Length: 238
Image: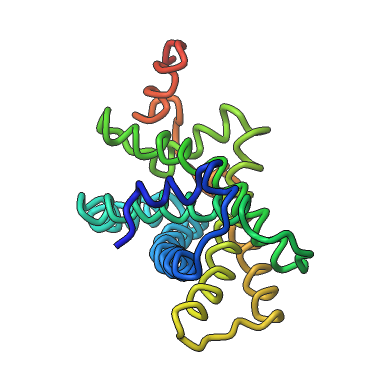
């Protein structure tokens, strides 16, 4: 097995000056593929729940409460967090150590999406999971609506990019990972484009629904998540 000490060694600046062995390359490519598949599975479930926001708060919250009982099961949650950290560390190592080559559009989008996700992932996890872990408060539909009302110029593009980047990186990465693991599955360019366009439409619709375009979230400032957010930033709830 590969431990975090080896991962840190692989991604460290000192290690990046040396050429890895073929065995090291193989081990880390396999680990990156396996960890990526686990994260992609979670992303798929998470996005499906997000897109259900188009059907209103009761559907979104109802499905999320059921899913939380599964993915917040402690051993599974630890496994998922471990997979995220491992995948991120190997990706950083590959980015700095890997050979410089001209990437096609598909590969560039995959890399850009991965970099964006790497920048925001831990802040996102802390904001969402931290509220429930430390305060027993879950964002749910009304909490997301609160954030959109509070800082629309930030959260509308942020949620949209998070959704689309997560979808593209997970779907395209699944094809790469399965190929590395010896499972023959080819994702054609046309299917990737079609699926990505669908994800863009579904994500935009979910955001509009979360923003109250055709739903009635309620008084967001009175939600538990909204009150917690206001308390943390030092503002008094109305």
